[in-house]
Each structure stands twice: as C-alpha cells, then as structure tokens.
Length: 90
Image (tube, rainbow, N blue to C red; front, side):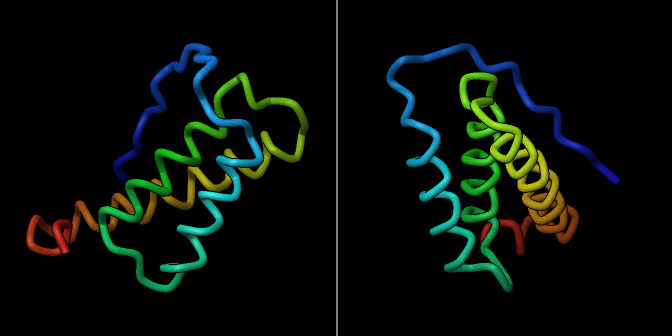
C-alpha cells in the first residue's frame, strides 16, 4: 500500500483555530462519506493534516482524532489514485 508522508508544518498565526478546522473537516466528511470524489478526499486529507499539526495538540482527543482521520482520508485518496487517472479526476 502506498502511504503519504505528512509534511512538517510550521506555526502560522493566520491558521484557523482547531475548532474551525474540525468543523470544516466534519462538514466535508458528512457530505460525501460514502463515496467522496477525489478532490473532496484530498481536501479532507489536507484539513486532517492541518489538524494534526503540533499547534493543535491542545488535547489528546484532537491528536487522536486527527491521526485517525489522516489514515482514513489517506486510504481514500490512495484508492482514487490507484483506480487510475479517469476516476481520480471525477
């Protein structure tokens, strides 16, 4: 299985707070939970990676949830990429 490495993020004061990131991610996830498009899966993965940044490590819950979401969305993105370019753009 192909894995994606998370780039090291540096603190950026313009980043939204953890609650905003979590709300955005959950919104995307609930809209397309059964069969997300490739673009939505990539967006959800980016949000999960943002939430996994050290700046959001305020609680064990946020750390745990963000890591699990990164795994889940990485798998979905990889499924699209392995299915081929025709499906990845849909």
